[in-house]
Length: 533
Image (tube, rainbow, N blue to C red):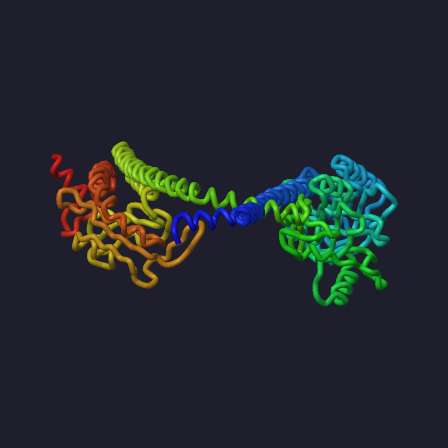
C-alpha cells in the first residue's frame, strides 16, 4: 500500500482511532488508580498496625507497667501492715482489720481502684477494702491462676466478670514478701481490683471501632455494646462454651444455653467487612502474664472509599507506579553504590580504630607492669589486662626453677604449688622452652568455670617467659573459646615486657632465693642478680 493509501485509510477511520485512544486512556487510568489505591490501602494498614501497637503498649503501660501495679508491688515489698496481714492464719478482726482496711483504702483510692484484698499463705482472703458491698473474706483462692502466678513472684493481671455479669474488672496481683525489703520468701498475694471503665474509654477513642480480646477468644471490651462477650469463630463451639462456663472467669455469661454471637472479622486478615462496610483491621498483643496467653487489642478503621472509587484509585496507582519504577530503580542503584562506598570507608576506619585501640591497650598494659615490683600485683595486672585483649578465662604463672613454683592464679584456684621440671605440659614447656598451642587439650586437663558457663577448655596455651635465654616463668592460659589461639602475635609481643618486669619483681622478692633454675643452679632471679653484681 502506498503512502497516500495509508493516509486515506487513517483518515477514513479517524473516529474509530479516537475512540480507541480514549478507551486506552481510560483503561490505563483505571489500572493506575487501582495501584494507587492499593498503595494507599497498604500504607493505611501499616499506619493502623503502628497505631494498634501503640495502643497495646499504652494499655500495658497503664496496667501491668503502670502506677497501679507499681503501688501494689511496693506495698507487697515494703508495707509492714500488708506483710503482717499475709502472715495471719484467720480473717483479721478488730484493730488489725481496721488498720489493714485503712492501708488498702489509701492504696486503692490513690490509683482509682474499686477494691483491694490480701491473700495469706494458705490462699485465703484475710482482709479487704471494697468500694461496694462485696465481701471475699475467708474465701479460698489458692486455685486462682492470678494467685498462683503471684506466689511464683510474677506480677500479673487477671480479667474477670461478676457473677451477675454486670461488672467487668481486672485484678492486679503481686507477691507479698515475708520481710520488708527482702525478696526471698513469698508469704501472700496483694490484689487490686480496677473496673474496666477506664480501659473502655481509652479504647473507644482510639479508632472507628476497638476491641479487647481475651486469650480464650472472648471480646472483653468493645466500642460497641453488641460485640461485648462475643467469640472468635472456632471449631467445637459447644465444648468451648462449656470450658468457659466451668472456668468461672466470666461469671454465668456462658451458662444456661445463652446465645453467644461469633464475629467473623475477628479471624480475618488486615481487610475485613463489618456490617457491609470495608474496614482495615490492626491487631497487637498485650502481655498481662496471663496463664492462657496474651490478650489482643484490635482496631478497625474505615477503608474510606466504596468499591467503585476503590477501583478507580487502584487503576490510577498502577500508572503512577509504572512511571516511578525506572526512576526509583536508578535512584536505588545509585544509592546502593553510594552506600557501598560509604560502608567500605567506614569499615576501613573501623579497622584502623580497632588496631589503634589494640595498640593502646597493649602499651597501657606494658606501662602498668613497669610501675609494679610486687609479684602478686604484677601478675594480677597482667592477667586483668590480658583478659581485655583476648578470651582468657583461667590462667596460672609459675616461676622458673626446679621445681617450678606457683606465683599467681587467675579465674581458678587449687593449682599445684610446685611442678617438677619436665612433668606434665607445664614442666615440658619449661624444660623445652617451647610454646605449646593446643586446640584439643587433654580430657579433664582443665575445667574452666566462669560466671556464665562451665566446661572443658577448648584452647590451651603454654608459653615460656624468657629473659636473655633465662627461663623467668611459664605462663599457662585456658579458654572456653578457640579464638585464644588466634592471639599468637599479641602474646608474643607481651612476653618480653612480662619477662623484663617479672624478673625485676622477682629480684626484689625476699623468697626469690628459694627458687631453683631448670639445671639445678640459680633461678632466673638469682641469675640476674648475679649479672647485676
